[in-house]
Image (cartoon, rainbow, N blue to C red; front, side, top):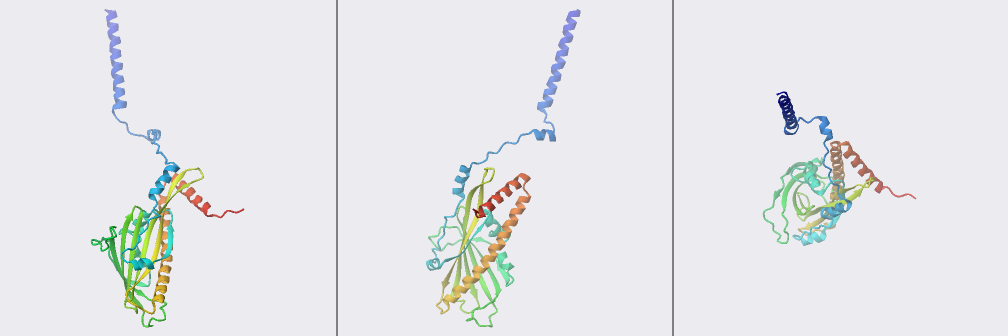
Length: 308
């Protein structure tokens, strides 16, 4: 009948609509669409929770190693003779990053490179850091690594008690290092000079301690961030193998020479650390660069003396 036919047509239309809706639903939900720039811009990135000043200060306590110390128990007389030659802070670089870049086997500029860069040095030969298998000092539980370096050095400004015929010397240096505690490295440097007067009378020891200084700084927007720097201390001592009338002259002249070299070394590394920082900033986003500039400005403000 006409009525039955009309109901049948209505049912067919409804079924078609349901099928069409199901297809659209599957099309939109079941098949991932290609992401467009518009859809990308609508995606909200998860917000990273910023650490509070209190949380950063708590982190500083763990990262700070300024109170760490190493005593040279193996040679008590040398330890007693040690005096501080120099303290230097390398800003905006943590101690682990500093070690990796300037003292590790993969360093971009190692102490061996510094020796090679000196025009007075020639015939420079060196080894890589290797683990020391036999630790002779039972009191020292550190895991030590060692490397050696030898070179020929042209001598200038000789002391009066040296013959004028002496123009150069050969030397052997043994470096040992240990990562004694978290964020604390120690280096023991032993220098033996050969083929010059009185060279058999003494050996020069250096103790180098690498500590990490951690601070929380706050910018003008009251945003706190962590600042790391590397604090290095060089100490110097002489081990006397034989007695000589020239002990004080040998010690004082050696100390002056080593300190002068250290000043140049720190100036050179400061420039290298600064260049590293600039390279890092050039890779940052504009927002990150702005934050870095604000951080730098705040540090400069702290250094300016207050005027009345």
